[in-house]
Amino acid sequence: MFSGVIVLPSLFFSGVSTLIFFIVTGGRVPSYLGCSGSFVSIILTISNYTSTSNSEMNTNTAAVQGAILVLSLAYAVVALVVIVFGCKWLEFFMPPIVTGSIITSIGLHLSFLSYDEATKSSFDTYMAIATASAIMLISVYAPTNALRRIALLLGTMTGYFIHAMCNLKGVGPSIDYSEIASNPWIRAPSVYFNLKFDSSSIGMVMPILIVLLAENLGHMKAIGSITHRPMLRYVGRAYLGDAMGCFVASLTGAVPFTTYAENIGVLSVTQVFSPLVILFAAVFAMLLGFFAKFSAIVKSIPQGVLGGVTIILYTLIAITGIRIWVVNKVDFNDTRNIFVGGLPVILATVMQTPLQVNNFQLDGIGAATFGSIILYQVLQGYDGLAMYRKSIKSAFNKNK
Image (cartoon, rainbow, N blue to C red):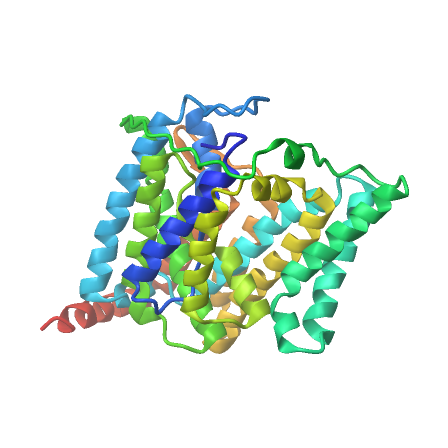
């Protein structure tokens, strides 16, 4: 887990998890499962991970895998509750003002990673600007819809090509092609199975469940907003698909897979909403998981180019959160909505170092998630209690 050879197993098992998600949701949710960023800081802390020059599996990840297994089972239980009783009770805790705030927070928090990649050097900055500009120009001015739908791919290829041409002129840091040359064409993705159930590790991981519930409810609302399709009826199934993605990770040593925030950005750019395309992408990713040279090509993409691509994606994620507010007509004349919508976004933007109290740790996204949920409940007062009774009554009446 998190070793130098992580690309191949991540590709393969993200495809497997997405295929499972497709089956669980009945092919109705156009979402690709990717490596969840919500786990990263916690996993690095538990595993005591440090970068090494070798490609061996980190030996401290057994406790991580055990903790993720427990979390995935708890996630599945919540999913079954949502399937049976619906998600009205969840919407009480996470209405549009909260989910919009969480999605916007994700985009702004992650944008700092793009900024770091794009500003390592002045050349990286130029490449990020060139790549982002190429994506925007293709998205707006490409002569056909087909080209506009692959603007991210074409923009990335353009940035890579410009960087390579600059290298030929002796400008900029050279692209490292050594791994492309040294890797075999075909190599099976590695699997690492070693479970250890440690109460401290489980205690550190379990709060992520709240973050996942909030994030993925926000993702479903965002997908519904983009596709103009009713997605909330599938929230329980989506949770179950996510839980199974985490379960797969716990048994294979891969990074946990959940509905992917970047998927929202891709849907916005491509305007391709067919779940069958997602199914094809899952199968294709599984095949690429055996293609070692593809892994090397991905790893060779320059930092500046990646910075340009990801800043576009994270911008689209942030805007999707704002779109949730607009579509649901959130009233910002209400002072409560200003605080619930604004403070978590600011917190996620500036909080780039995880907050840790004893064994409890939160990154900016987690802090924004808990912050928005708690602020909403505290500021609702007696109105909130009435809404809570109504939501519980509605959930149980559904099953009479």
